[in-house]
Each structure stands twice: as C-alpha cells, then as structure tokens.
Length: 379
Image (cartoon, rainbow, N blue to C red; front, side, top):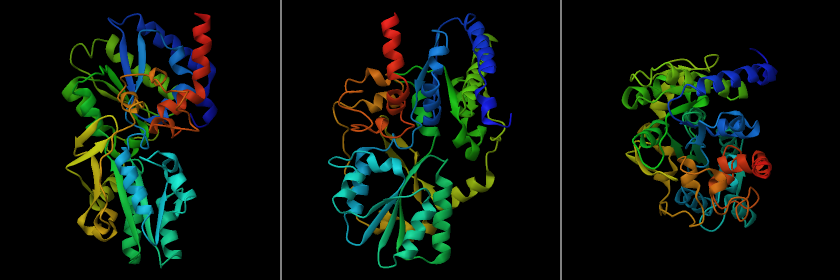
C-alpha cells in the first residue's frame, strides 16, 4: 500500500471486520485489548472502529498520550519557570491548555508571561539565538517518539555554545507504565495494540517483555483504520490458534513498512548520550514509576533547567472531580467520568485527557459522543 486511501478502503475494512467477527466466535471468553498510543485512540473514535467490533472484544485506553500523563505538579513547575525574570518558555501547542493548579500556560501568557508554542524544539533554539538577553527554556514532553528531536536540539545547543538555552525535560519511557498495568491492579488487559511511533525508535524488541514475562500478545500498529483492524486480527489469531493458552504469546509487527525489530539505532544512541534515566518519575494516574523518566545527562548538564533553576517541585493532586487517571489506565471509559461533556469539555478542560486531540476524552467528545447517544436511543 502506498496511498492513504488504500488504508481506508471500505471493502478491505469490511473483509477485516468479517474475519475478526468470525474469529471472535472461537474465543473462550471476552477479551480486553488496550491501545497504548493516543494516536490509535483518535483513529478508533474518529472512524467508529470500536462500534464495528463484536461485543466480545473491548478496547480500552492506555497511558500513551504524552500530554495526558504529565502530572499537575510538573505543569506548575513550568508555570513557575515562565514567571521568572527574563525567561521565555517554549513548548508544544497542546501543552498550552493543560491546566495547572491555578492557570494554564495559555492563561499565564495572557497575564503577561512570555510563553510561546513551537512546532519543534529546534524552533526554541532559534528563539534563544534571536534573544541573547533572555533565558529560553523548552518545556519538553513525550515518549521516545519526540525525545530524539529534543536530543538533537540539545546537541546543537552544545555545539553552538549557547549560554541562554535550557530544557525542562518531562520525557518518559514506554516500558514502565505498561509493566505497571501488566503487573496487575484494577485493569485486566488481555493484549496490547502497540504504539507505532514509539516503536520506530525503540523497535518491536522493546515490547518483548510483555509476552516473555506476562504471556500478553502485542501487535505494533500503524495509525490508519486498516492498520488497527489488522492489528486486532493479528492479536485474535494468537488467541484462537491456542498460542496464548499455551504460553506462546508474541509480538507482531503490523507496521513493518516503518518499524524494524531494532528500531532506529542512531536515535537510540543519541538518547543514551543526551538523557539519563531517572530513578523515579511521577505519572498522572499511575503515580511514581521507577526508571520511567528521562533526565538530562551530565554531559549536557549546562542545559538542564532543573539544575539551573530552583524549581518548587511541589506535587499536586488532580482535581477531585477529574478521573483522567482512571481513563489513562483503562479502568473507565471517558463518558463514565462524572464531569465528561458537562463541566469538562475541550473548551474548558479540567483534566489533561480533554486537552490533546490524542487524549481519550477529547477524541471521544469530538467523534463519539453523538454516536453513543444515537446508539442509546436505538437500544
């Protein structure tokens, strides 16, 4: 396949759905599959894929939206940085509307802080070069998908000898949250739709621990409707063939047109050089997870905002009414949150899941709410 239309072909989709439905009749019990990436959640809701699946297959949402997993305390730290004299804070557009304890970055900008959204970390480096009398800080978020671009930016900053640029790193790694979910808790998951973007960097090898240690199958998928449907079919095949029952679950690579087993060795090597794994890091919905955050290495310590500034570092509980944590761990669906679609909307978000287009709450609000209302009327 070479063109987008081929990945959205209705005839091919119908064939895949028929295949999935046929295999579903052979299941011993209903299964719950977790899509890890927020991009998958967006596609599932946008194209109504979950409504096309048999009732015995339930899709739940995982902690794969990079904006959604940032805890409120780290947002407050960014707001504090932005309030310091002669500071320009730059970040991605989605982060601008994430609520802090009192205001969002967007509201802080309206109140006078110099906060700018950029499309790339390299844009913030340009801002630093154009404003030598200012301290420019890039508020970095994301999994191994976006971390390489931050790493490249730090390398360029070091090569250029910039003295007024630093990074507030909130990059995180994909394995610890998946391990936490697989280890148990309130969410029982039977398999994972693996994140294609992360896998382009870390490779399919990064998910081998799930079948090896927990006998949970994984299908690393692309982001078009047919990608996800094919990934679901791959996972079902492992159940109906008896492989999972025999303890032989495995990682499948549906996204082979992009993803390799070893990922991108050059990107991984740069990450190892620029970042260091933190002993622990806080996640929204999952709490503190060991070895889950990326701090900045000693080699690039001169560009580490956490060393250059004495951050407040206060940890802040989520609003009582917000259930983003339960959505991010697949414990509830977005519409089961008490404030979904009423007090919490994309225009007035209470939690992070309603901010980013990849957030489960925002995706369902934009693409699924009316479908659910119509379905309820018909039933």
